[in-house]
Length: 211
Image (cartoon, rainbow, N blue to C red; front, side):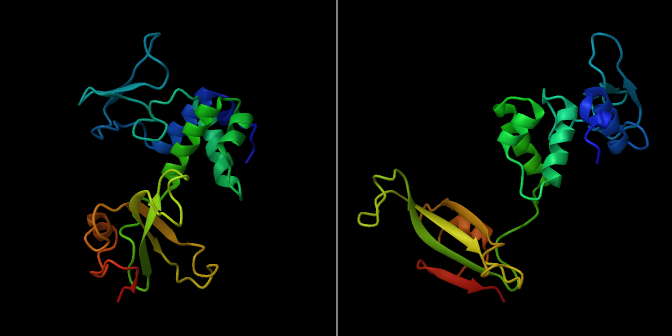
């Protein structure tokens, strides 16, 4: 992909490209789905603002997306998405800050929103057919207070799902971790029950493979 493409250099070109991708059959209301919309013109409105003739709500191509309510130009959003998606080893917020010419705070915000959009929020509870879930108590807090001798600190629980894939490294390369606070015992923790419904009723270290 050519990084000198107009959509990476001009915010209006980026908006037009996004509109063509999201609305190939023409703009529709992102609130009610109606195609009866009017583009608002004049100096009182920024480019790309539409109003629905049915629900009377205003919207743009970024409404309902990770770019909504952001003041970062759309061409920088597209450039960041391309750089993060095409980088084999990841792309840090500091790299975006230097490449896009924006502040580190803006780059950090932008990177986290893009990563959130790229994530899979339908993973469901930990465990399943052929999966092993391990949970054990741990301690956290100030380093001076949490030591192996005193083990003072706040009680917590961490659960890890092992990977059974033959391509994983030692069974842990693709593991998923779910740390959370433990209010009572391991077995009675409602959080553990919600993430791992098949957890056995025990308060000791556990490892169970789902049937």
